[in-house]
Structure formats: structure tokens, C-alpha cells
Length: 281
Ligand SMILES: NC(=O)c1ccc[n+]([C@@H]2O[C@H](COP(=O)([O-])OP(=O)(O)OC[C@H]3O[C@@H](n4cnc5c(N)ncnc54)[C@H](OP(=O)(O)O)[C@@H]3O)[C@@H](O)[C@H]2O)c1
Image 1 (tube, rainbow, N blue to C red):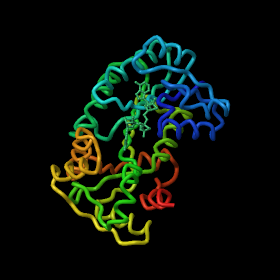
Image 2: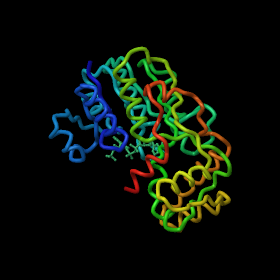
Image 3: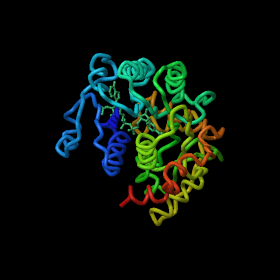
Image 4: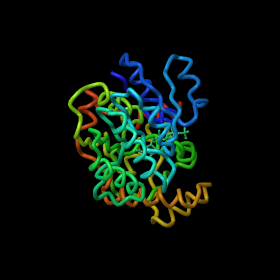
């Protein structure tokens, strides 16, 4: 069986390649710039270059592939067309299973971030390639970029009110994806994936525990939080997207309660405190 991973130069894709190697597979890493994965090539991983914008290159990349993970891209506004290119190439290649890394509750998820996942899943609903949805909730790593500031100031800011966010380590989602790619019976399935569900007050508590110093949560109105992120140096659009995500979390849109992740992993997902401890080490 030949397994390929797109976005293999990215953080999730790399972890899936590592998980597949641990499983004894010989995965193909599909990337748009081979130079970024020279280390993987040195370790014997087959690299195939293809941009999501290039159907002919995608045909070459997926030739002979039985199962593929489509990692969603990061070029906002272009992604439905790009993902459609990968889906069509998988159909032409006769791929037996395409796994798509999506977002929870995509049909009704109001987050800005969910829009292109919804568009992609709508294409998958009509696609002829057998497919499985890996609806990944938040990475705990989404909070590690601001960890040093939170620890230093003793305050973790957000706009999620008392809403809960189900998170897991990026590596947990990668291990679950590798499991789906290497075992049978997943075609047509929709997995809603998330680990422990924390309020932002509990998240601040996890940061305190990891850092050994008190950190409290300060809730801000959505617009103020977006402004604070912008002031901290984020691009205005990205700040708005993150503040919108927090507003969605306040409404419970990432409060995943299914046991799908734990069941696929055969173990509990990694607690936030462990991810924060590792990031601070
Ligand atoms: N669940 C969450 O909390 C969460 C958080 C952030 C993002 N996400 C989503 O999950 C995806 C994976 O997460 P990540 O942390 O691995 O993100 P990442 O590190 O940004 O990886 C994105 C990957 O997609 C590739 N890519 C983007 N546009 C492409 C194109 N046009 N053609 C070919 N490859 C393309 C990138 O290639 P290059 O290396 O060449 O750029 C990279 O390998 C993200 O792209 C995003 O859609 C989810």
C-alpha cells in the first residue's frame, strides 16, 4: 500500500510522516518546495513536488498512490479551489482513500476559519474518491506562541468568555491521521476530533501549572482582543480571524465532546499542560 501526505513540509504534515515512518510505512511526502524537506529526503522519504495550484504536478504526485492525506493549505481565499485540485487529481489517480484535515461541526460552524473547510467538504460530498473527514479541533500549540508573554505578565488574554475549547497536541491529530491511513474501514466516516475541553480560565490554570507561576485569564470584548493582537504585531486580518475564533469558542463551536480522537489513538489525547510544559522547557 502506498501512502502520501500533502503539506508534508508543514507542522502537521511532518508529524504525520514521522508517525507513518514509526508504523513501518514508506510514505511519500508531497510538498511544493522540496528544499524544505531535504532532511526527510536524506532519511529516505520519497519527495514529490506539487503545488495545490498545479493539476498536472498533482497528477504526477499522486500516481500509484493508494491513500492520501490532504492537509488543508494556508493561503486564505484560495483554498477551496486548491483543495478541489487535489481531490480531482486523487480521482484521476484512482486513489482508494482520501483523508481531509477539516474543522469540527463544519456544516454549521460559524467561524471564518470554517468557511473554506465547508467549501472543501461540499466538494468531497460529491466526489467519487472514497473519503474520510478528520475534523481536527484546536491545536494546544495555538497558545504556545503567546506563552512567554502570558507567563511574564501573569495574564492570558482572550475573548472566549466561559466557552470551552477541546484541544489536543498537533502530534495527537497526526497520530490519528496515520492510524486512519494505515487501517481499514474509514471510508465515509466523519471523525470529530478533540481532547480535553477547557475554558480559558482553565487554560490559564494549565499555563500556571506548567510555568510554576500564577497566570490568570482576562476576558476582553472581541474587538478589543483583535486590537490587542494587532498591537502585538499580528496582521489585521489574522487578528480578526483569531478574535472571531474566540467568539466562536465562547459559543461552544469547538467544544468537541466525541471520543473519536481517543478511540483512534487508543489512548487519551495529550493534556494542554504537557504541551505548555514542553514549549516552556
Ligand atoms: N486545528 C488547528 O488548530 C489549526 C491551526 C492552524 C492551522 N490549521 C489548518 O491545518 C493546516 C495544517 O496545520 P499546520 O500547523 O501543519 O500548518 P502549516 O505548518 O502552515 O502547514 C501548511 C502546509 O500546507 C502547505 N501548503 C499551503 N499552500 C500550499 C499550496 N498551494 N500547495 C502545496 N502545499 C501548500 C504548506 O507548504 P509550505 O511549507 O510550502 O508553506 C505547508 O506544508 C493549516 O494549513 C490550516 O489549514 C489548523
